[in-house]
Length: 135
Length: 125
Image (cartoon, chains in turn orange, red):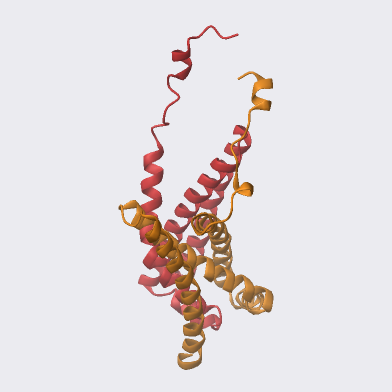
């Protein structure tokens, strides 16, 4: 293409000119949580490495994870997981042809938001209870 | 000035004819990650506060070690596929885009291998 034409080419409007709606917000969050989960997977690899290296490095890792900063990472990570899981199931339902009309899109969207908060809370309550009762 | 007809310029610019495999692989790994992910996140929430011996003996079971390796493979495959799409969407510069895609692909393989070797080391000791 001729450079001067390419430079003056009008660009289609992007995110900043649109009002945020539940459909776009959930779509953006799916990508956002996906990136967070990739970062979390790297943390998992480091945890496996620490466990394989022995008790000293394992407890150093645990100390990092269980201080306030580490707990924020763990809770944010688990929320990202449950969000990506619920919205991922919503995507798979779309892939098999279910739930395309707008009322249903909004309904499944709100279901995803509520259940990802609920599952995150449930997982941590279960985790704390499990630790108290069986360990 | 190009001595080509409009038809000649348009030919071959259609689909890349290789996107279906990416799409299908992303869905298959997504389905596999539903049970594997729930199992592993649950295990990790418990293990994050456990003493060393508990976490170590957890991975010394044959089934746990096998499923953990399976999980890591599917996880990094799915993660790579997702990051690749994001890079393709937001980096318009061809060279930069491909540099990032190749880097994230090799990095994903490296991360998966590191985790697998660690799991095998724990399992075999």
